[in-house]
Amino acid sequence: MSKFNPPFVTIPEVRHIRYSGEGAFRRTKDCVFHVRLEQPDSRILRLLQREFPGIPVVGGEAPEGAGYAVSLGASRCGQPADVTGIAVPSSGIEEGYELAVRPERIEVRAVRAAGLFYGLQTLRQLLDTAAGDSLPCADIHDWPDTARRGMHFDFRQTHSRLEKLEEAIAQFARFKINTLLIEYEDKFPFRCDPVLRHPKHAFTEEQLARLLEAAREHYIEVMPLQQTFGHLEYVLRHEAYAPLRETPESTGELCPCKPGSYELLTKMLDEIIAAHPDSPYVHLGCDEVYSLCECETCRERFGGSREAAFIHFVNRMIEYTAARGKQPVIWHDMLDKCPEDLLQTLDPRVAVMIWIYNYRNIEAEVSALTAKFRRLGIDVMGAPAVRCFDWAEHQNYPVAVNRLDNLKQWRDTAAKLDIDCVIGTNWTAAFSLGTPYGIFETTWYVNGYHADVTWNRSGGGEDYIDRFMAVFHGLRPAAVAAKVGRYTNEDYYFIIRHFTEEAVRHRDIAELIAVMHDFEVATDRSRAIHKYAYRWRLYPGDGAERRSLLNNYVRNRSGLQRVRPRMTAVLRRFQPDDMADHYVLSRFYLHDYLNETLYKELGLDETLLPQSHDS
Image 1 (tube, rainbow, N blue to C red):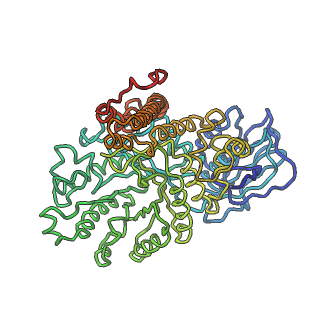
Image 2: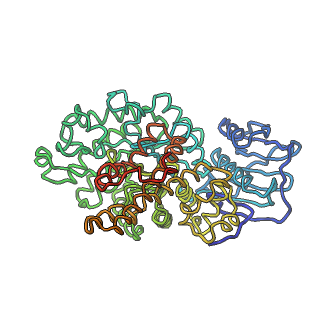
Image 3: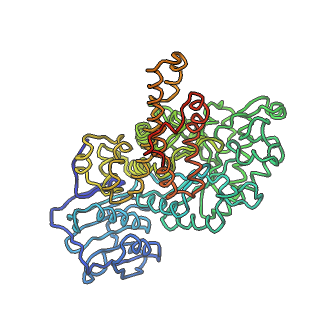
């Protein structure tokens, strides 16, 4: 692992940087921002006020063609230069920028407002990670490799408080993310039927507007996701909609032949579309439709062809969405094995988002799928996973070794295939009726890696963990190494728990991950009580076996008692109280159940625990 600590540390890593050796810029109390905007954009001014509080802002509009620029320096330095000759290629002109550090001032220039916005995010990181109030003189030329760089809010299970979601959106922008996929499910404030809204946690219309305004404020385009075929448990669980199931047993799959199916989904889509007037895309879901063509009507109508039934209904959804001025998007998996002749009947106005989360052959699989869809004139998007199932339903934080590898493979594959929209999916559960994964805030490390490799495909190197520790937590590599020794990119979740006191920024995230780690230690599977309970069955009355059983019960139960109130308290900082309690119950339910059944049957109870652990 590299311990080289360059003067400029950022996430994403900037593309081109040249240190001039001409001295350094030193921030002083009389510094001001001089602003020049070709078109008025109050978001830039508010960004300066938020990210650089206390520094006055002067200047304003400029003539057409002058571009967008901000300089930081003494008031006598005057206006920044125009954008003539800016060294950003046409492919990156929308979001590219130049940043020049000189002894007398720092200048950020861009052809578009979004480019200036991202240049200022870089400046904020440079000042945050600088040694003291000075920056060495240098020139930065930076622009994105991927046009649409996306993160994901999945609201199906637990989600953060609204103010935390707004903070997350601001952090996405600091990482130069410009797209946000949101799966609302029953958290959307549906009007067509109140039963579709979660009774406690659905957003009000005012809250939804606030969330979407936060995205717009940070140059982030929202892509709403409304499931239209499978994963509709939150709808079909209700008695009024149960008749629309493909079969009585299929709690999540809609029957395409029931007349009410199309009418229900189009009403829901109308509301989603109306709430997102500026969003060019609407994601229609359509993944994992497990019980296709099982009802008698579907078998007769589609000749038992699952693919024919799928494409028929999806085409209706595509037509409805496209007619309302939106680009429809669907997941790829139901088309994976579709025969070529049937695939040719898919409406080419759709974009297909390929999601492949594991294994070592991402390039081969994605290349074959991309070629198949592009031959039919269908656009392709990519979806690696920031968090997904990973062979373990209880994920208190992402499995870093799998997630970083998946993102790295997608980085290389997207570059080779010129896939210009890549969304890092971040699931809260396998499905609506399942057990929640870990909460959103434990995924920042992997989110940052995704941002790193989508903006700059040369990013994601061995120094990523050092850059993340510096940018996100304010920790220097030397200090990290001095405390924990050697480490690599995959070790973040094992080492950040040691820095709950030292973290300068986002200390609450370090504390959250530390609690999750302590919970996992307390439930160490290698010391699961059943492994000692079965021995007591083999050797009843044996004193050594009884002592071994008792020792492990005391160790495990005491650890759980210590961590439970800490986990509850930490989670309530991020989530509504009852939602945090739901998460805690999901983690402790099995252990509590065993304590009330198996352990009690064995004569074990909490009176055997040391008194110091009773609180």
